[in-house]
Each structure stands twice: as structure tokens, then as C-alpha cells.
Image (cartoon, rainbow, N blue to C red):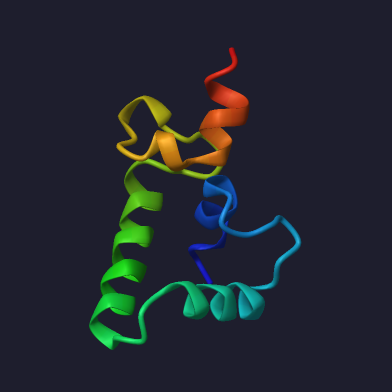
Length: 78
């Protein structure tokens, strides 16, 4: 799953969670509606490509820093 790094930074999954386990966790969090799941996946990938780049996240441009573990624990305390 290409979205694992973003899910890790956001704090939705741990660093050692496999792609299959991450998929199951997200399935449990999201409504069982194919369109919602697809749109969430697409938005997550887009967020990772444009803002939450794993090696160098652009937190200053992120609209969800209040929900992000990485921002709250690494960036904000500085």
C-alpha cells in the first residue's frame, strides 16, 4: 500500500504494521461504501504526493496538522 507512510505520519498505524493489516484497520474505520473508500484512498495518495512527502513533509502547507501525530510530536514542539 502506497499510503502506509502517510498513515504512519498521521498516527493512524504503527511503523511495523504490514500493508495487509493497514488495509484491515482502515476498512474498520471507514464506512463500507465503495465510493467513500475510493475517495479516501485517492485523497490520501494525493496528500502524500503534494504535502505529506515521507522524507520531507511540508507541514507548513498541511490543513490537518491538528490531527497529525508527526506534527504534534516532532514539528510543533520545536
